Picture 1 (tube, rainbow, N blue to C red):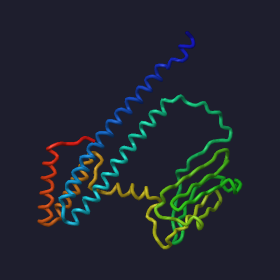
Picture 2: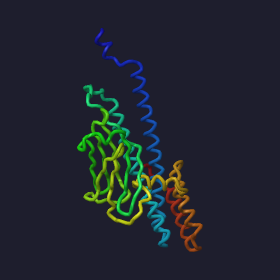
Picture 3: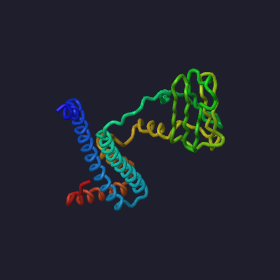
Picture 4: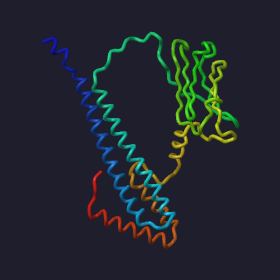
Length: 260
């Protein structure tokens, strides 16, 4: 009897697992619904693209088509990742031996500027100038770098920056350790060019903050706004082309929708 009681999961544990399953199911439904709307948009863009004859209209629709296809791919990847995470959470936790060498702290605070030849990243770490030189390691690739500082006051410190805005010269890049500071020098592959952002991700995030024709609430609104903009800026021939393609695509959809 005692063995059976020990193996049975506790009530809080059962409720936690049930909550995780419910959350995953809700998230999965949201992903499928969003993917279905995106698929409908993609089909409509394809229909319009077949009917459009003017280069300006075709270019805009082609760009929108690529954008929607990318969103669909991302949603499918998110769905697969959530399933994998749910499966991992159901596995019994492994017993890990105590770590006696400290732990690794992720560095998130830094500053940067640039010159004609270098992009310079400044990381403040108190006492870093007192550790052995070999404890401060930086690895460069053409579009990334990672810093690892070992055994600084009983801890390690790590910083990984991927997707740099522009390529750098691996051979020309280096590091310098100063009082309480690590200076990373990324040699620009194209000198005398200005970096407005450190990474491509920062650039994309800033651009998303600007007013655009896309919205997060309804994937269809992005497409509608693009078409409205083309229609408003177009001449009479362009407007007739869009109107004709729009009517024909609606008629085609009315005959039979396909699910995602």
